[in-house]
Image (cartoon, rainbow, N blue to C red):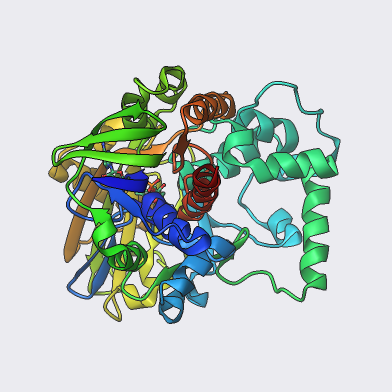
Length: 459
Ligand SMILES: Cc1cc2nc3c(=O)[nH]c(=O)nc-3n(C[C@H](O)[C@H](O)[C@H](O)COP(=O)(O)OP(=O)(O)OC[C@H]3O[C@@H](n4cnc5c(N)ncnc54)[C@H](O)[C@@H]3O)c2cc1C
């Protein structure tokens, strides 16, 4: 068997890379090798009793042109579903109480999201110490610019929400490059924010509503798996399921990939696996990539989804987008999405549908609890936050052992070293271990990798 481009891994990155190779560069002779019996990797949806169960991503922000283009060219333009206005309010747990995150600077200063001293400290942001020369943690950056309290509450919650990570370990430059750029460009986040607001006003965009920073959470009718499902369908025979790649070696100007079904010869290769699997495959052709890749950890995460037929079962309101939990608050929870308000079509009408995240860098052991213990922990914590512990009518639990890649301090250096070694061996790397874990970032990386492969093939 021979192919021009072999793509290892049939998650959203691998499927998108194959699609971009065909679409952008006319390279049709592509093979995607996927270890499991289904395409999509972490993007997985199941439908049960009127609930849309997302195993992995709940959605993507609609500000990424590559993702929207992929959706449209897959014929899913009409299936896009944006978060409902009902999900406009977001909350953070502080001092055991849910506090609304205000969207305008004035409302923020008047809110109780931080104690008064913490809010006043924000006013000193433009006068913060200059950034150090070394790679800074997200926490240190936030403490330096907006003060310790805001770093502990707001920024820790944000890092938990995106990476299920520890803000004291993650690299600012790798996890929130835009924030690092805002500081570099404007010298202050406040000045950058006002510049952005002026720009948005000029462009006639309104703020507020369910839009988070930079976009509105978006999914597809019947869930996120519609996208990988459609890409897989269009790839047809090019996608080979249940074909784990066991070894990769160079042969002549190309490569040999070993699977259980035999050997596949390829002129070029894109690896889209988690970092540990990539390190194993590169041990032969690019040994210098192994150590940097082994330095990219993942954290486990458990997703507990609970359905309640009666929307009035909790004592406190369960309306809005959901809440995030900074370190030191409820240790059993990372956050909870109110899916019934975010995407009302994903739950039976009149019901509540909660999606609770557990584990992450903060409490990896919690993600490994057995179902009964995990559910008891979640119900206990929800009881304290929402004021009652009603029996859920439905419960679904999903675990990801290698949940989310962690971009710890020095990450960008490790990525550069791994990419350099892989590149010297003629191999491309793309996906969540490298330059963004979001679906949007994975699709963008897939497109860039497809372009590099097309250039190699032309050479
Ligand atoms: C619980 C959770 C919630 C999330 N929520 C969001 C969200 O709301 N929004 C968002 O944008 N992102 C979210 N993410 C992140 C996002 O879903 C992932 O980063 C992204 O889907 C990763 O895609 P990928 O293709 O790079 O990797 P994966 O999805 O991990 O795909 C890798 C594929 O490689 C296959 N594979 C492994 N080894 C081999 C081998 N040897 N040979 C062949 N195939 C192999 C695997 O089976 C898998 O299918 C979430 C992630 C999790 C876990």
